[in-house]
Length: 225
Image (cartoon, rainbow, N blue to C red; front, side, top):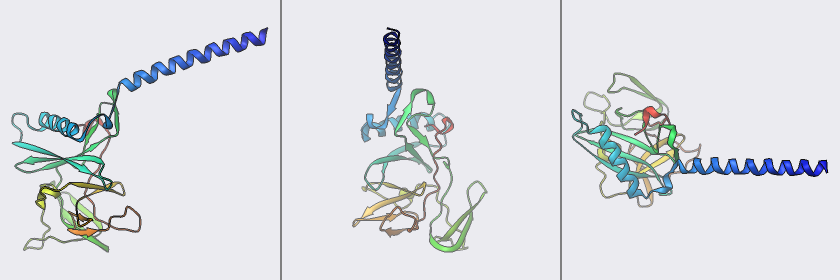
């Protein structure tokens, strides 16, 4: 009799725990926003609206902006590019999901927002250095600068890799490579690296070497779009 009572009590406790777990799960799911909830067009509209609220306020240095979706090698949406007028840009990461109270949201701005970039190619054993627009020294191991002015200084680009190369009517790619990204377009079934201006048989392995964009996404509310 005592054993039967113990089993009954354990069954009741288990049932209550299951109900509580289900309620918590349903509340969590109701507060969870997923990237798959939206189409690319809907994501683009949402990013555009958020970008205009952040960057086109009265007194802003920007006069207008345009938003472009960026895809990985499997043609899956991974990021967005926000191009500013008259110049400037920022990359924005699309998170797979975001909880309502994490204060970050689905869209996270690049930590290096506002930094210039230079053209370079891979050259093992060589180190490139340049001074960026903030007066800081940037060191790039195993690279050689490929675009210099008449005085031998690297040309600094304030616009995005896509705008600098005047990419039009092509799908924008942002290829994930060793915790960074390669801005690229695809031509003749090969990816064209918009930093080195070289074609790649892209292979995300340790045996391959590619130059990448200075891009880092920190899932912190300070970088929320």
